Image 1 (cartoon, rainbow, N blue to C red):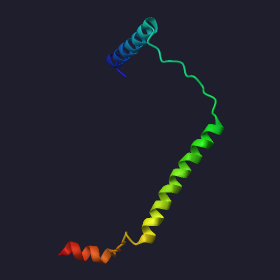
Image 2 (image 1 turned 45 degrees about the vertical axis):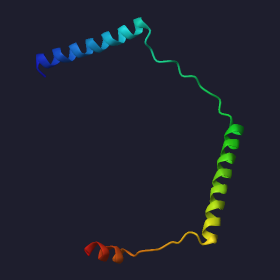
Image 3 (image 1 turned 180 degrees about the vertical axis):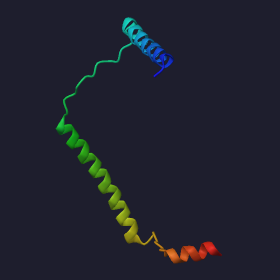
Image 4 (image 1 turned 30 degrees about the vertical axis):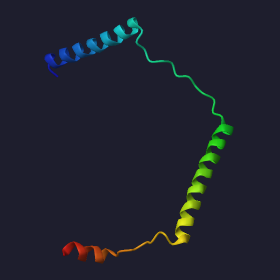
Length: 86
């Protein structure tokens, strides 16, 4: 490495150290992490609520399928290619 490269790297390191020192002096530090104790009971209640919502949505979908209001039409890959060629 040349002396110019080393000098530039040292200037960069000194600038970064200055920024760190300035942030320490001004008090701009990251907030301390606060650990929270997980509440498994509350998590399970939330899971149960989500499962109930999913079940109700599935019930509605099942009713729609049984009523015949929804029609499903399948198209094979060959039909798509033939339609695109037209």
